[in-house]
Image (cartoon, rainbow, N blue to C red; front, side, top):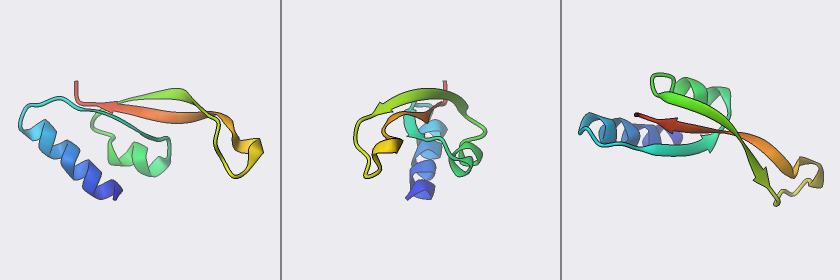
Amino acid sequence: MQIRLKELCDYIDSIGAYFMLSNSCTDFVLNLYSHYNIDQVAANRAINSDPLKRGKIKEVIVTNY
């Protein structure tokens, strides 16, 4: 699914439109979108099967502008 999402973002970029994408902060995602603008943000998560993993997590905001 990540590859298809990236292909959609590439298409949007190719027609001159803008996009903003929120995604997981993983090495795979960082490499996949490396030629776009990437900002890392802290996102608050209240739901997780492991209570110790609830709270702030890193996400990325990817834009082509």
